[in-house]
Amino acid sequence: MARKRRTGSDFFHYLTSAITDVTVYKLRKSHSHCIQNSERRLALETNLSKISSLNPSNVATIEKNGSQISPLDPIGARIQGVDLTASHAPSPEVIGALEDEMANRGFLAFKNKGQLTVDDFLRVSCWWGGKELHSTHGVHPATPGG
Image 1: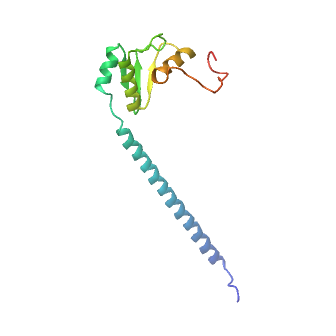
Image 2: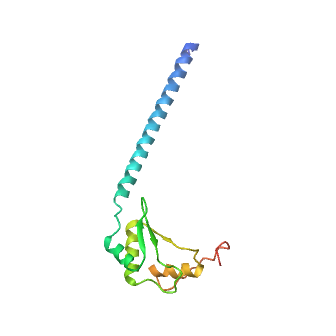
Image 3: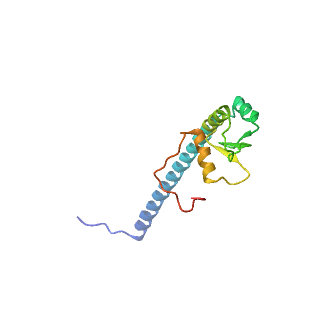
């Protein structure tokens, strides 16, 4: 069977056809990527809209303690006036209100005048967990006071 000899115009047609196919593929892929990003953005916005506002009862409990709570945008809450360096924990009602807001808003950011010591941090961590911290991990050399 004899091979058909390709001319310059055949090669040009083949090349432009291949380039067109690649361009169409890239455009479709780009369009698909844009749709996926739009869907992700919509899902994120939908999930963020499900984050509840601060519970008025929790706000009242926290403010009765002399502290303040304010929502962060889009998630989380800022806590002011809770002394994380104090030797005693806030009342169980305040801890419960803080824990409830942490669960509803995702996280709490405490505003303090100074940096916490390692002991302060560990003591405050126990407010929401067990009575004692235990770790099998070593202390990183860059840890303050570690």
